[in-house]
Image (cartoon, rainbow, N blue to C red; front, side):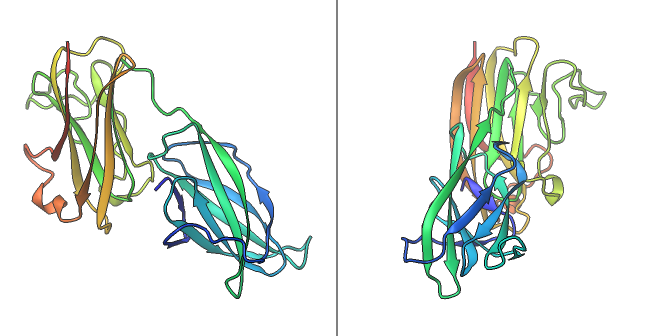
Length: 269
């Protein structure tokens, strides 16, 4: 799913056909450009006379969201205001996302579909090597990358820098590769739903790389779908996708030498 309406009700299927119901009389989009993983983006406006709820669907999504009207508009007394708080998924694969809007009256009659769109900003840093894990549910999913020399970089060891006395990778990001963030750490949801392993300044070591996705905690979600991509000097060298279920967090514990589900492998010459 590319779009989530925070606080909205998810409904199965697409928007209805126009049945002579109210229109969406105003759409205000204060923020025209968004980033994948961004949340709290405001979209607001008014429903035409008789409208009591707004249906919202992103282009390409199979289901849609429903939110009730927010209250009366004092400028146009017979119309109700609405406001949607949007969160944008890392599943968006284009530089623009179109969003369809439809008003519904208290009898369930839908009106004409109107729309707006958001430009989607690039979200990948310039890097010699970039491995990205993006997912579609509010879970604590961790990216772990095992380098050719056996060093594992992930939430527990965020950098491939000089090892510490106990053999773990250091926590500095000055040299080598590093993890840019620990998204949704221990279910403190930031809704970014993406982690990146980045190698910026020098050439990454040659050899075989292993990429794991570790479901540290499902955070009450039943499952999560995810995508892993790897780019070397701007060229894609690996892409894979899969799904983990909530019980996988128990079958694949996040401790010791259990880095999660092996998702992708690639070689750098």
